[in-house]
Length: 245
Image (cartoon, rainbow, N blue to C red):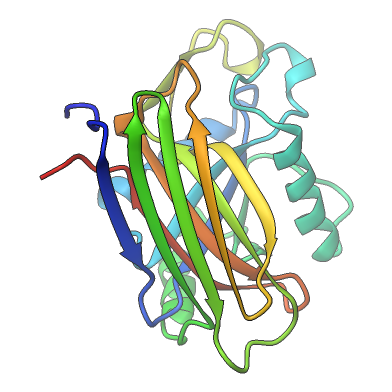
């Protein structure tokens, strides 16, 4: 597909039902991760769609010292995985690690368990509303605007996050446990914004400079609202960068 032209704008509002947030903690240095990466890619190709589940691949950096430096890895993602693990009462983190609505999900490789958990989340009404707007204002720049509104009755102290992700990525690994393997990735988080306090409602606007190796036509933006107190996702949504029609 052709790269998005300057001025291309698209928008999306989250549905009335709860959309699940799926976080995969992964690394190119881990030889058990490619299977999980393929599973996550399959959600885009064959899966339920962004109105049911928002998928993100967060590459951690604690494998970088073990033979191969992952170009997508970030200490911030390692810290988030550690926070989720501590909240669950776990002392250690590992890859591949999957969290479903902030809860550790060890049954990710069982299609039946995954679908059962997803149906249970989607059956609930959303506890927040999200609206996303994306505009490609000029080559190499992406304008993102998001508005968040917690519904009356939502407990705790909601926090909002934005994540810019990229699909159709490829890496030829030259060292470490995956030496000689070509890896393919989708939903790789390139930019992470938050937490943003949602005191009833909140808005955020960002003009993002894209990395030189990013391909704008493969980008998307995810947005979600989490309640750290109840350890749940109040709502999530995602929107791909679009071309003018």
